[in-house]
Length: 607
Image 1 (cartoon, rainbow, N blue to C red):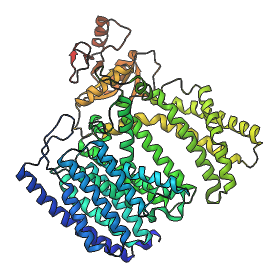
Image 2: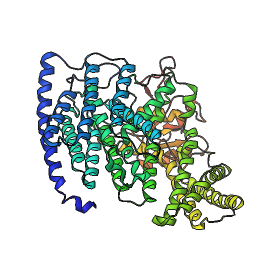
Image 3: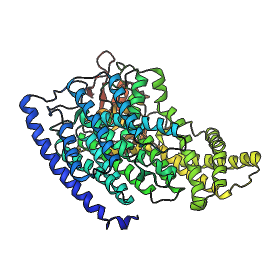
């Protein structure tokens, strides 16, 4: 069914009725549950390892589950045994979560119960059709169901986050089923969407109730299982098989990054904490609501890409999915890069510091970007008419092309400067690297395969795409920082300053000033002009020390900030006189006043 047709589908009326009915019933049940919990004192007390500060009610999963099941009886035909068995198995996950809410269960027992539920679902025929091998599909299905279930459980770390992301995912799944003409599956999605919407009324910040494990495990398993039904795998094409992963990309993304960083710290994955993507966005300066809304937007974007793959050719769909996952990877790297703390009191493993260092991450990002570029070039050249032979040629030459282009980047000294400080000069450097890499790739492919069957147009397109994509990666860090900074709710800032230096000390000073609503108009290079006309930490490097008087008049600045330990070619007295002669107030920041340990409040001294 094409998009214009499904608006006239009779299924849409049933879906709308199911959604609004479940929404009303669930909202009423949640309101009653809040009153009961407050009467009996079943409220959450703030803890140091938890984010919330109020006293929301417990057991929000009970009305969420009850609203869904009650309306399922009214809308889901009893003759559809598969769906009722799926709902029954998901109900077991609700019971598991409720028991865990009442009395904490050991992680091993919870995992065993989840494994049992996944096995029961697979036994009734709900399997992820990744390939033609049943064993592989069964193993992938188990990992999928358990992973998605726990992903929503881990995502339940900030008011309205897990419920809102689940609401968006359920809405997209419902859309897929309506488009496919599957009424019963669409009704399950609509019922889940309505129940989540009714619950979210009371769960969005400031939350009056938490869903708990009973709600997160139930809804996570239900969405994971529903996403495996046949409508998301039209024609069995690989791009369509990835549709569930796209719809549920944000909980997968958050769980992946949190799991990796916790393991690198030597911390159990199941241990609670305030290190999720939502928490990191808040620490970067976003309000809680804006952080949650940003993750909503990313979840909606993931679902939109999944929806587009259903109406794209077999060559365009993987490109859409690949670029969206690459964007999420880049977003996650910038977000979780702050794992390397400047606070000496935070214990991090040497391996972790190496892996998350800015300059090391380029060796993860660049090969992915180069591979995507080559695949997209092939897709643009051949379009929907690409043959199996051309696909085989592209895949065979892919590792060779990526390796040669990485070597060309090294030869052109593209890794000489920190990639995250991307400047205008990188346009030319990366352009030469892309051109040399393509010429060398053609030579390598000719030497190995005599260029038989290959297209010169593919390599020409690849050169331009590589050039643009690599530069976009290098400009992403200042863009990320500036975007987060601009989204902060900041009133007019009367105090604007320059920061001296471009080292890590300047980054600490920049964060210190942002927390105090002081705007940095730009950085002043103290390193002989090496960083001029570049963006460092998302701020422009405007000039040298000798340019201070001119820059101050141009930007209306009357104050310069000297971060602690930042080296300048003046003594303390000389530099004070230097600033005074230019009518500039000098403020020295002391961020490590207490025996060298980071002081979150810091200090400043005006001279």
